[in-house]
Structure formats: C-alpha cells, structure tokens
Length: 223
Image 1 (spheres, rainbow, N blue to C red):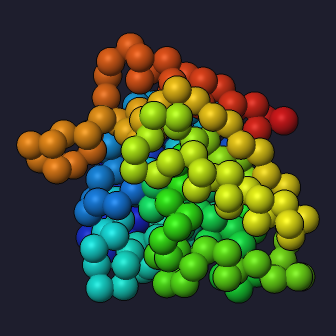
Image 2: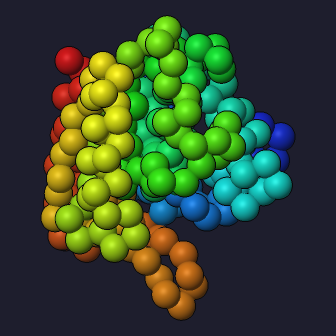
C-alpha cells in the first residue's frame, strides 16, 4: 500500500500495483477516515484490483464536495480506462450514486456504481441535493449494485430496496445483495463507541463478509 497526495494536503491510500482496473473507494460520514475501509481495500487488491481510498471530509463547509471531485480526477489518472468503478460506503454510497446519476453533468464516465449500505435518504454530498434528483431521461444508465446489511441499524435494508425501486421505475439497471452484516462490517469496519468512529475490523466474521463482497466486486470488474 502506498500513501499518496491526491490534492494539496489531501491523502489517499493506493492498494495494488496494476494500473487497470481501478476502483475508487469512498468511506462514509467521518473526517479523513480512509483507514476504516482498509480491510475491504486489501481484499480487493488481493483480487487484482487497484484501489484508491481517499480521505474526505464530510464535515467540511462544502460537505466534502471538493475532496470527492479531486479524488475522482486522481483515480482516473491511475488507470488506462477512463470509465471508473466507484464504490461508496454509507454517505460515500450516496456520493457514488449521485455521481453516477449526474455523470454527464460532471463529465465523468462511470462503469459501475457499488454502494455499501448507501445512505440514499440524505443529500448527495457532491451535488448537495437528494440523490434521485439526478435522474434525467438522457442520462447514461450505468449499472448499480447495492449491498445491504440485514443487521444494519443505521441504514436499514428498506433504504436500498426503495432506492432500487426508484431506479427500476426509470429503466435503470440495479442489483441488490443482502448480507448478514451491520453498518460497519459491510465495509470491513466496526464502530468504536469510545472514539465515536468506525475503525477497520480484523475479526473472522467481518473478514468473511468482506470476502463475499470482494468476490462479487471482482466478478463485476473482470466480467
């Protein structure tokens, strides 16, 4: 793993040596918490995927927009294919969805959007608007895969199913994968109540969940 500067003063971890395929992996609602998704990033790298996991600040004045957009430019520069696979957890999942639905507006080509416990009930931090407001008739119908945890008490599975129903109603391809996971383990993390933060989790149960998710993502990226 290499630590790089993807924008002035902003760091990202890059896992894997191959320049292609590249996945951009966004953490959720925290300030500079790229380490929380380390276990998932490592699992993806073991499957031959180059992962860019940037810090971003969801508590910044712009909601993290500048960080997210800068990390997109950096991730695109790492691969030979201009189409980007974007993976987002929680609020990062809302950002991934918002970017995908507004890809034409942001002049970004997204190959696949993968959302882990996506917080679609809140505004997309890139646009600052409800995620589904980004659907337009002429948008490119980039496929979505939504991972949802049946033990998630932060973002219940109903959020994913309702979002998927809205996508289906607009002829947008989407798959839902439900796992026996909570809000942290679905991204390879655990909640530390003392620190009020999510941290990377090393326990066998979480690693088993991560392996299932990493296998599914690898199958998507190498299809």
